[in-house]
Length: 470
Image (cartoon, rainbow, N blue to C red):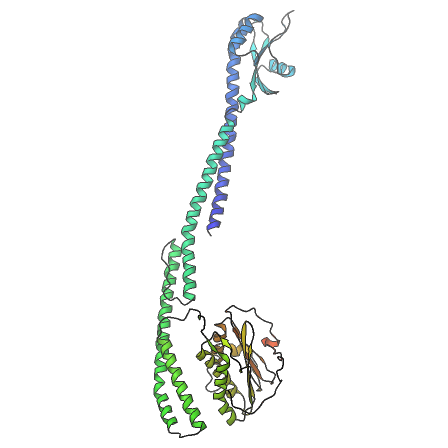
């Protein structure tokens, strides 16, 4: 906007300067020309009284010398009765021009080498018409014109520079509040809830700043209300959790009882985490520092050990690959565990008992890929499944499981894709970027799915019964 105002001001001022300076310069030139010929007319008028009295050559030469210069003035007297024509001074005008002036009886000008001549007719006592010729050099015709043009150009340049400076200041006054508004919007988008914009500048921008600040206040209030609501709802869960914990304690001994008690304890920890996060007024906007994150292989082994008991009860074959070596990722341990639980919970919830599933971990140079696949019926509409808040329509489905996984991957610059697995069912691929840079989108297969390629040394569908994990 700033440069646009400068360009518009430059164009308008330049047009105004040209519109006024060019005609004014032409007027100055005409005035200089009129001034030069007016002086020539005065010189010619000084000779006219002498010509009306005498035509003696000597006397006329003295008159011409006293009136001007014999090199710039000439007198042409026609031949009288039996006399000869008389020319005094240097003749520059053509004979036909002199004859035309003598015949018409009025003054005229003609162009000659080095300038112009003024031809002034004068009546003699004999009745003949003499012609006084006055030479006007070109330097006298253009005297002062160059200076006038230089002054006009300087004034025009000063006007243009002044208008550009004023437009630039006006542009700064308009652009600076707009830039502050943009910076405030970026800061608010980054989670800096205290970002506000000074209410200054033109009226429109002041109104925009007022609206932005009001919106930011409303966002802060809405987030505070949301945190309070999440904290209150989580706090209300403590009572049923207490009942579950007491009931789990009365189950006695056994693998199922231990699994139930472990699940209740984990649920209590998750509720405590939700309450602490909801009560925290400062958003988590800073990037994770060096050493932050977790070992993805360890988390995968831990969660598969948790779900293996349920898989054993339902007769499901399962497999873990790539989790035998440490794999560091820039993701919190609880976040990765929540994402795996969401995906594995979907497998148990939406596939029949006895359906096999697998979890694979691939460690690349710039990313870690976690694949959760099953041999179920698959997902008919992957895009709808990825939409936040869309459940499957079954009881207990909130539609937020895949959204949790998506936010986990996108926090590192990665993404989540749903495709067809080699087992014949659904494959959810979590791409976790290690360097924090956004990755270029890859080709999608038919209907937006991603086709998996079998990795080197990876069996197509070899499953074992549950075995002990390291």
